[in-house]
Length: 300
Length: 284
Image (cartoon, rainbow over all chains, first blue to last red):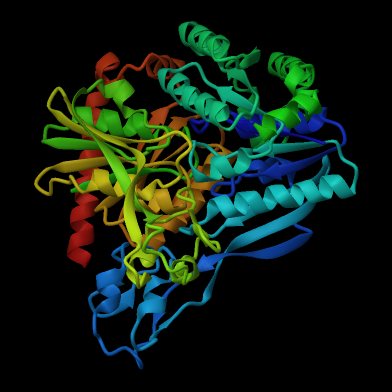
């Protein structure tokens, strides 16, 4: 079983539009939305939210005013400035480390488990899908990303699916790192802008650090051919495979407005043809097809 | 006045709005790029960097000669960053949140502070704009301490414009919290609207006055406008979907410099924000 994780570094380069298009091309696969912060894949894939579970991602310190003597020990030890003057804990600042809970001389601080979000196993017209919704202003998105990926893997193993298609989060931080561990390969969707280049370089470095083979696809490539060339040069230099270019047009947005992927909306569009070519290239990418090589990489 | 420019969805135009806004107003201004995973503002403002500092977090290192293997450090650590073995103690610094619990509880004074680099903060200036941004080290995950470091340089006497990261979780909160105004940037598409709703929920939890910029207006459909009306979310500016603007952006150029008519539009945006901040203060 293989897992392809779609990343970009910079947001808004077309990760989700392209992932949803791949859903029409990939066979025997499980979809996974690992952008738990601002998940959008469900807007196109329309999952049925068949099984819903709570995600308890951490704890939250709460001072019991009946027991609190106002000694100030918690204010003194909290490294996150979460204890406010009148001995109330700001839930937004609280890191959930529990140090105040353990060290309060009056044992006046409770530490309830916090509901941080919801995760779902669904059916879609393309196959099973695992996805989630992190609660607003919550932490531990990395933990939730790991959870949805594990569940997708379980479904794939149980149902003999051979591919997991994971729509990743933007950036290079905690949720992104959680989305790539043990993946077979990463596909970076880059846009030909100075910021698109800058941001894909950082994702490229991250993939090297974690020894995951990477490919890059340039979306809206004709917006700026100089930047497109720079992205391809950077890819060559750092052994990232270039798997294609996609034109800048409105077809993706039009299909999104219709809540369809590009193949359902207009399969014969130029964009559609280009996405199909990208998919074929990904399937023929050697490191995406040699489980042995991949296993070696993972053990390095 | 602190204006934080945010959006749920990435790539809607936060950096375009924050840098062009900063370039347009006739007041002293500082720009803080708090998207430390992927900082891009410097590519448009081209600041001269004058100072660099690293952001470090204290992590534990155990002095095995003093350690009595009592496990108190392991037991207080909620993040599984310390494992006490029979004759050794392992510290996993990537799991450490630097809460300081292990330092507090060790009866033998065996926990020593080691420095772990999270990223760096650079200070500079760009034609009168004071500029600070942060950059997370590759493979590090602790974003909020870098944002807090940047924001510790807030000058209350001038305008501060924060370029926030996308999303709705802890890094975004660190970039929005205690701002006087949150300027949300979206695009009029189903993805843009869905993530805008999440961003509005976040802003409402924080209770900060806010308004909307619709970027790439004319691209998708009218649902963002319908939502804004229903939710009393003021639309402060619309930037049309225009390949000319996309091309300017792609080269790292400033819209207000290439299309000077935008300078007045961004000044108007700033005036509307100032009025809303004033109104919010009076209501308080």
